[in-house]
Amino acid sequence: MTPGIFHSAIVRKTWLAHALATMLLWGVWGAFTGISAQRSFPETLVYCVWSLTMIPPALYALARDRWRLDRDARSATHGMIIGLLGAGGQMVLFFAVTTGPAYLIFPVISLSPVVTIAMSYLLLRERTNALGAAGIVLALLALPLFDFSPQSLGESKGIGWFLLSLIVMGCWGVQAFFVKLANRDMSAESIFFYMMVTGLLLAPVAWAITDFAQPVNWGADGPYLAAGIQLLNAIGALTLVYAFRYGQAIVVSPLINAGAPLMTAAISLIAVGVLPSGLKLIGLALACVAAVLLVLAPEQNVAPIVRRSPKAGDIRNRVECEPFST
Image (cartoon, rainbow, N blue to C red; front, side):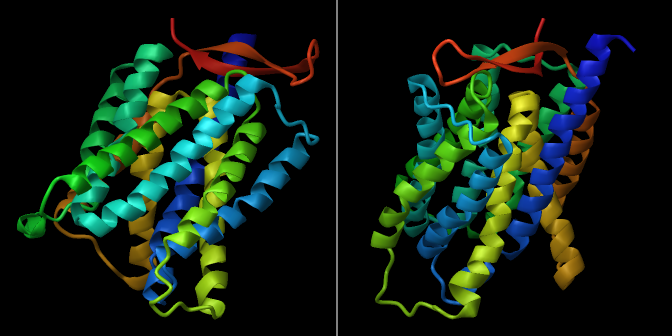
C-alpha cells in the first residue's frame, strides 16, 4: 500500500467514525430531548443547562491536546464566529417558535446543509463523484420531511416566522462551513473551546427570556435530567468538529443531518414502539439510502496540513491529512 492510499484510508476511517458517533449521540438526544419540556422545564432553561454541559467535553478535549489553545487573532475570530452562529441561531429559534408553526419552521431550518454545501463547493472547491452527489440530493430531499405536517398548513399566519427560520437556517449552515474552514489552520479542540465559551456567554440571554411566571420543575427530572440528555448533544458537537476536520463538508453535513433523525426514529421505535408514518416514513427511507450512498462515495486525494501554534514562530510537529479536490 502506497503512503497516499494509506493516508486516505486513515482519513476516511477517522471522519466516518466521528460522523457515525455524532449521528448516534444526536439520535439518542433527539429521541429524549423533548422530555424536559414535557416535565415543565422550559427550552430556554434547557439551553442554559446545555451550555454548562459543553464544559466537560471542552476541557477533556483540551487536556488531550496538552492544553494547547490557539489564541492568535485569526483562530479566536473563527472560533467566536462558529460559536455565535450556533448559539445565536438557537436564540433566534426561541423567538421563531413563538411566532409561527413548528411543523413548518423545522423543515426550513433542516435545509441548513444547502448553505454549507453551496459555500464549501464555491469557496473551498470541495467536490464529490456521482454517488456522493446522489446521496447529497436524497439527504436534502429527506430533511424537510421529518417535521413537515401538511394537514396543518392552513393554520400558519404571517411571514415573520419564515424570515426567522431563514435566519436560523443561514446561521447553522454558515456555522458548519466555518467549522470546516477553521479546521484548516487551528485545532478541533480550540474550535470546540470557543464554541463552549460563546454558548456560556449567551446563557444569560436565555435565562432572561424565560417565562418564570409559568411553573418550573427544579426537581431531579428537571435540570438534572436535562443535563444528562444535553450532555449527549455536547459530546456529539465535539465529534462533529472532528468529522468536519477529516471529512468533506459537502458530505459530512448532509450525512449527519439526515442520519441523526434516522437514529432517533430507530431508537423511538425500539424504546417506545412508535412507528413513523406518512411523509416522515418517506423521509426516513430517503435518509437511509442517502446515508449509504454518502458512506460509500469514494474519498478525494489527501494533502497534509501543518497546524500553526499560537506562539509566534513555533510550528508544531503535527501533520494531519485532509481530502482536497483536484
